[in-house]
Length: 298
Ligand code: HEM
Image (tube, rainbow, N blue to C red; front, side, top):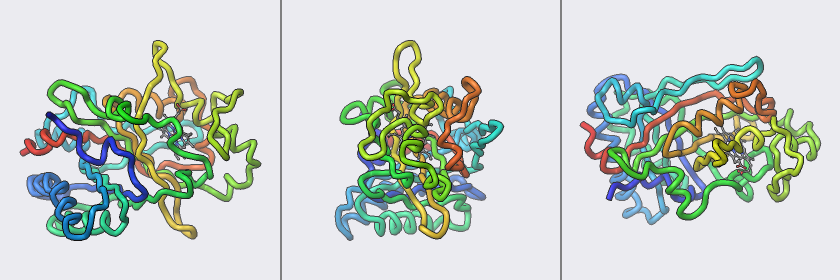
């Protein structure tokens, strides 16, 4: 059976590491090291204890094309968005690594073991450590993940079910930097209108503005709701940059693109009010091959 890589479907655990890399030389060596990632995580946990780690590695469509790696038709590089007020930039990167589990130190250790032998032939473009915050809240104080698919639906939403790329997934990665002082100047009722849910218990507002975040991303096509599986976590330091490392997996790119278009004003000219309080600073679409496809890449 073609299996998805282990970070994609399971609930993420309290710690994650998200890394974007650019390959500067010897792509074949980097690819071999990508194929070793799961083994490094396994060996680490044999020595230091089970942290229920999930690991996954993916590649940008541009990198796949350049190096002859098979990827599904219709998966395209991240298209930057720019409305009058808001920007979603594209980040030039080739490889994306997602690690999650019960221990921050083991995420760190596994990535260090993985990176050391190829340090001279890659640039780390963005390395962000995420952590579960309070009772699974974003730093805005709102619960993040309420409408995430649960149980078997997680697999159905995130993983390509059949065909030559069965077990694969498409990832959207964006790092957002929050402006919490501006956010905290809003009263709770105004914040709830921006998100579209109540703050204490994440109940959908009856009079949800269509420019609220949920109003922008809860989209139906032909009567069917578009679904994605989010694996985001808050990150950062109190005195420095902080926000949400947004990561979502989907068996197709289309829902990810439609939601972004809707947030950034490319669907009906309206933008997501939340974007006045947070700024996307990275952005990439990555193909996350199944374990079998990854092992076959040469
Ligand atoms: C829902 C926060 C970016 C897609 C939510 C909710 C919060 C939230 C608080 C409501 C609770 C829930 O269902 O999880 C954020 C923050 C973001 C961000 C802080 C960035 C700073 C995005 C992006 C996308 C997205 C970029 C898609 C491209 C969704 C979806 C839902 C959701 C699909 C569920 C909507 C529903 O059906 O009710 N988000 N989000 N979010 N978000 Fe985001």
